[in-house]
Length: 164
Image (spheres, rainbow, N blue to C red):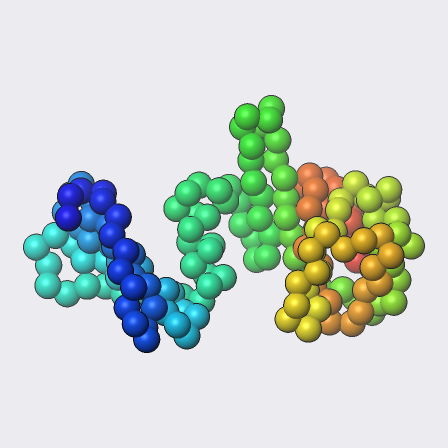
């Protein structure tokens, strides 16, 4: 395989393997298994023993973001992304578990965007994602909300909406 060439191979009953060889001769292989895990192996040139890591899909996406430089800052379930082409715009995306104090209330009722400038872009309820919920969307206990905005808007959302 030539340097930096990508090779993929369907492995019946196992999943799909992607492999690249670096300019230095190291090999990196990633397996997407039928069970949903992602396995990554690295083999240094002239070595016989590979190193391995097994990741969940979430962990693999985080690694991918790191490798592509998409994540500038990460803190627990918060990510800040910088867009240099847009006058160095920095957007924060944060996940929050809905407190009892706003259970049963709608996005419109809470006036989230008007009060904070932040926007609810998705809600996870019972392992199902609701993308771009409408203003009439009412929160339930156990919901996880994905909120986007500038850093100051996210802080204001925490102070004004996420009050216990």
